[in-house]
Amino acid sequence: MNSSYLSGLAVSTKPGAIQTKLIRQAWSDSGRVYGYRKLHDDLLDQGETCCPNRVARLTKLAGIKAQIGYRRRPGSHSGRPSPVIDNTLARQFDVEAPDRVWVTDITYIRTMKGFAYLAVVLDLYSRRVVGWSMQSRQTTDVVLQALHMAIRRRKPKSRVLIHPDQGSQFTSMDWIAFIRAHNLEHSMSRRGNCHDNTVAESFFSSLRCERIRRRTCKTRQGARQDVPNTIEMFYNPVRKHVRNRMLSPVQFEQQQILNAQGVQKSRGYSKP
Image (cartoon, rainbow, N blue to C red; front, side, top):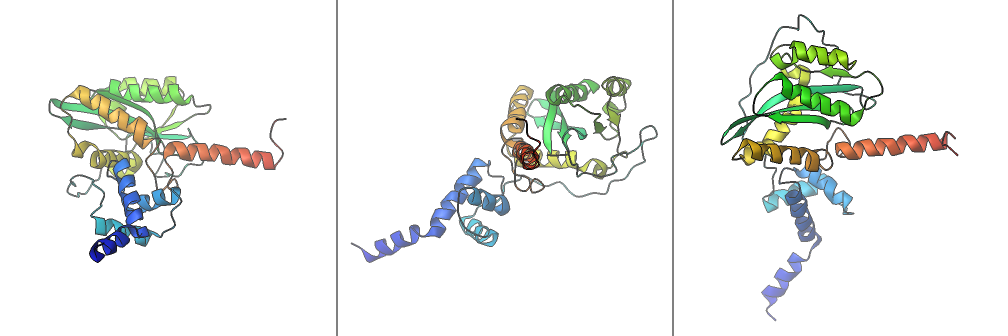
């Protein structure tokens, strides 16, 4: 047998080649949006032993990189505080329990037939999208539908702080009446300042880079199917978050429940 063939075979069966294949599969499963840190975590989940630097080197050699679409030009943002609602959240983004603080915002989704508008509600505890709504018009109804979904799904047992920016949808009489009717505590960002609502802005940025800018939907109806599927089938149950110790929002919440149950059992609080 040809010696060059044998040498090529030997190279292809080295651990590096196997790990590169696993990395490529994990990258493909993520929709090609994972960088080397999250790919490294995927390899650990599969029982592989390697360091982040090795994964970074293998991804570079294989030409694997996160596909995040185009970038917008950076700019400065400033604005006046809300004259009606105080910024109670004050950028305190680390929350110790679920359904204590929600943030909400609205953005547009470009399609070949015009814009669709997406409103989301995220729980700061796990960064999980607990409510969403998409409509063809940027009205108060789209943000109310997202908040109503969050309340219906989560059924909070205590008062929740809800934090939007100063968009017209969040200063309308219908929005304020809904907040009061459902015993929610209102907090509001400064006008035109994304840093006061950075978690929602970060979610939209990831959604645009990883999904929207990579595949423009032909119609609004197509966007209404694609974006919610991304939220419910990938972002919430699968997408890793550094803040969640490389767990998805759903996995993080489930792990915290199991940890709490373990603490109760160790202290003798479990039910007989």
